[in-house]
Image (cartoon, rainbow, N blue to C red):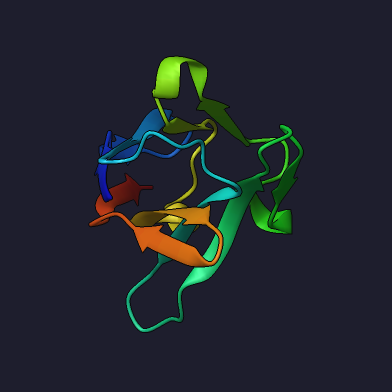
Length: 116
């Protein structure tokens, strides 16, 4: 299974970006899917997660600004993160993670840079 993340870039504060993460090599639907991020000098943190049933959870700092979603139709196995009202503190490398218990898979990371 391979994950390909895309959609990162550089925006000014208040702008928006939409990240995507697509899986290849699996015919099965995944369990939880999540977005993590790692800023320079900081540990990787969970940003948002979505279960196979569509339940979502977010870190407090992005609630109301970010929306996670997934598309499992026809084994598409794609996850999205709509990021609005971006802040400089959102700057980080964003990683996607798909779980197919007991395994977990990581994407390669996509850089998000928000300037003030």
